[in-house]
Length: 123
Image 1 (cartoon, one colour):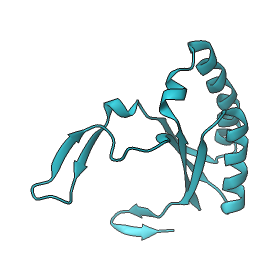
Image 2 (cartoon, helix red, strand yellow):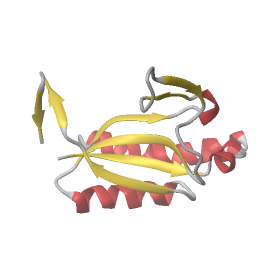
Image 3 (cartoon, helix red, strand yellow):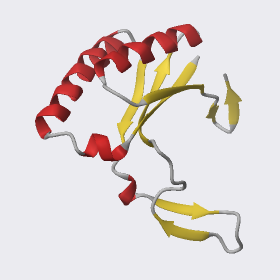
Image 4 (cartoon, helix red, strand yellow):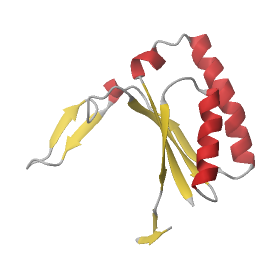
């Protein structure tokens, strides 16, 4: 089963890290990434650019409205994500705990992913 691991944190906190602090976090995460990749568990992963680079398309209007910035004002922002191939939710939560130990603060949302391949849904 595929799971999305959505990474939330306070963007102003993460953006305030020094280069050395950021490099240290990324090095700790890199150790976990290498193990997951070797086990065939790690799919696409991305670190998103700051919300100041976001553009939002509001579909609830006709015509849709394009806005600079993120969709919602929140305490924590979506800063990145992983796609994991896990046997079950418990395995995905274990990986989230391991990544959480390498990355201070914030939280991870774990959500099952339904794939659409060639126009058809697949679990």
